[in-house]
Length: 344
Image 1: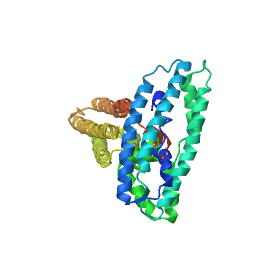
Image 2: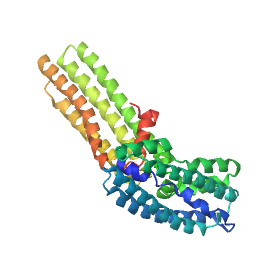
Image 3: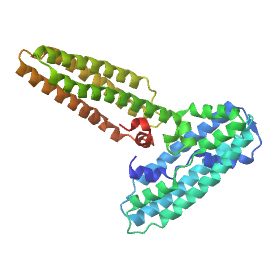
Image 4: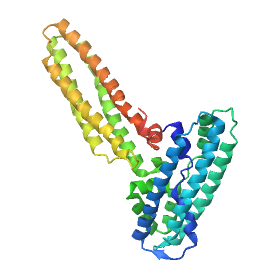
């Protein structure tokens, strides 16, 4: 996520903290209707705040004094949009389930916590010295403030009131609603974590298999005595490599796109990479079978060429992901950095 976008996103607080104002209502609504109303209101607020973010990020943020004024205006516009949302949610009443009252109380608690956070961030931004680097200082403030975790509060309520799990699941069925209600960054969304974990597990398995095969092939080639042996070693390697690459392709295609705004496009980049890798490995399989291994000198030259192509393949994989730069990861980048299965 770019520093500018994070700058704007910092005050895009979860809708939970705005919804807290509905806590005094004792009118009850069926769970499905309550969640449907909540998500409609969330969608409207999401559109409003996107427009506010677009206006803010178009401002000149290189001049700190002007950037602080723009941010102060951004916060006020966010508060107005939140007030509109608050009115809509207030009309919903309470979800008619065991624990409905406690759900509203959780919203209230989150509201108080995040209202304080908003005020704190706004004050600290206003105090940034005019000669300081605005983006760098704001990044530090946001990192120190951390992100709210409303999901954890509802999960805690659900321990004593199991029906609240149904409410959480109903919200999660709408990825856009879940993204806005539970976190300013969907990194906390279990669907996002599952997607990133799946991508990393598939890629890690493939990289490990090809790396192990590449290490082994060098030892085998050193021990080869004839051109026919060299060819067989290379053919076996690329056959296994094709099988491993097809497995990678299947694993990537089984994953559902992550629940972020550009999720389908981001997922498509990985799926396309898998398809391209299969095509590349199929081409190498054909080439190794048709290469000239008639003499030991030719066999040695071809072996060196194909080993270089293996190294190039890893580079091509990395380059294929450059397309991701045009999309906003909305927290997926954090998961790629933090999940253990992504550390390869």
